[in-house]
Image 1 (tube, rainbow, N blue to C red):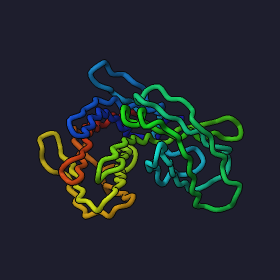
Image 2: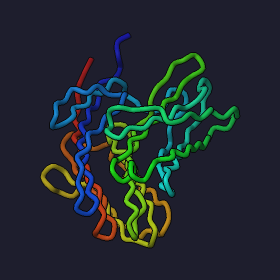
Image 3: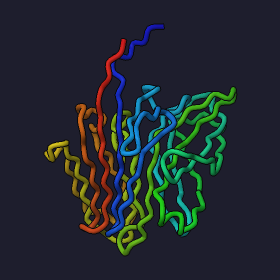
Image 4: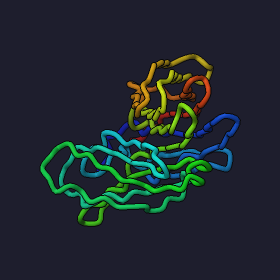
Length: 248
């Protein structure tokens, strides 16, 4: 059948995360994409238009850091067919391993909340950014993947962890800031020429805070820079290249 999709969005994500003087280049991959890039960058070509799970819409996906673990939480609008979720983790955004499994609720509720505790050694959490994705497996063996969540443990005086779903081609960007004390959070989004596209400032409480960058899924093709700053100290930076490919 001839596809009715006229616009397939391509996204290139090169993530550079700063924590103090420490800087680590991160390459962002997901199994919903085909890697066509080289060593200095990643070109990601979408193989599917959506990254929501097959039977149910993934409403949110976040990670909260505790003492030697990340609590993963997600919410779906339920439909039939799903049997369970595999939780997969990567330290490079490319090679994933299964770290757990959660059975689907056998209920008629249309709003389902799930959680999974991933016990991660502090030495691993401090050294690597952790990439998480959900693999929904149906009773007949069919499966699909969620969008990817990137989480970093800071564990400073003010900031416990940051996590982001940097996927403006598919959904609005979500930023999760887990604070230890009341802090000042700034989120900047700039275009390739440095012009401010979006700026958000918050006096955030000492808790888990989630910020949705409304409208970022409608960004025009081009290069963008996302920056999250906490108390002018800890920061996370990402470069996003969004372009459009037209097919019949």
